Length: 459
Image 1: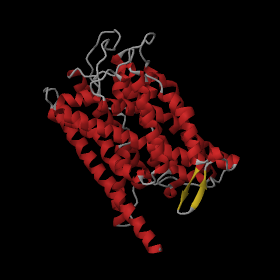
Image 2: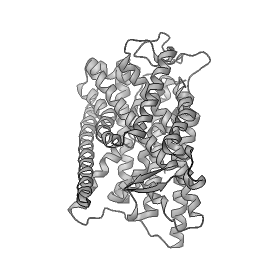
Image 3: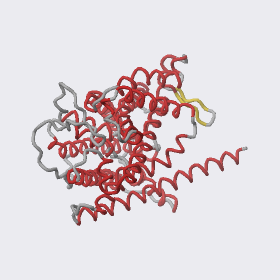
Image 4: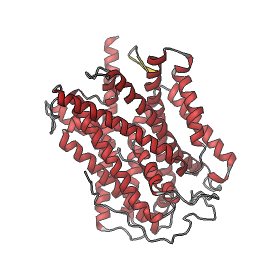
């Protein structure tokens, strides 16, 4: 199925010379290295796609369950369109302001205060994502405790309990053997192969889900999924709105579009790269949501991965459960470096705004890398309440990076470059961003207070 996204990234023609600024500057994160002729189209597509497809993919089938198949899939496609619109606006003002970074575009419109505020939002959003990724990786491979019950991880089920299969040891080994080497790359293009592998692991999950759903449908053990939302009362109506944050934040990748663009061999390809990545991710999202809801129906859990802990009711079901869990854990392991790349650049931009680019300073590069990895590791292992904190900050920071800042740039329009269409879309994005944050924060507060009330009642 071909999805045509009606928005485009208008980019002035640039000469086909090396697209890097030969004079390093703090507003230019380009990497000048001998022997590097620029990144390829396909490598950039995989890097941008990996930035998009993270842990949120597992929440999409539940969102479609709430909305019904037709509205749910329609909202997934609409999310891709809105994301392209926001990137379109961002790149329009990138060119007219002659900036090479997201923070440079914001500074051109809102000054130094705006730049610092954007960097803080990106940092909070990225740290939140990486901590959650590390927590989920620990859950998948090492296991987790919930209400006094231990749920075994894949490695514990396969090999039994050992020191290296405990959560702290496993995550420490993953950090030292996988995250640290991949985080040592100076160019985002160097991650193109791991990004391609990450997308491949996501496709494995889709293929297995589709295969199991098709097998069970032919077998007659499952029926057609519900096409429209199901209303059983006022609570079910309001629950529809809890899907907004999931769908609005599904395609966030704005923090990495400039680093990818700066390394391109042919910068005029960026428009096609964004469209191709969004088309690829929309296809993965639609397939995941369609077959996930098709397979589990109204029993689809908020995190569809939890549905693969039980009996699938087919031959080799236990084996397929393990393949799904391992492929998802491996997918997140390989998503980690691409998000970390953005985090490191923005932390450095905030702390050392007047220093030479990070890639030219070995001591600062490894210092920032080490401190951030240690901070994320400690947060994922020894601060139990950190997930709750990032639920609030992430709900605000992520939508600000993806929608509020690009929309605010177009509405302010300091250079008189925005069209009426840009401004109408910008107001729509701000409305969606505010409603998404409001719903997410309200839902999180309700969940926290409900769990505390339930715990108090049991005692």
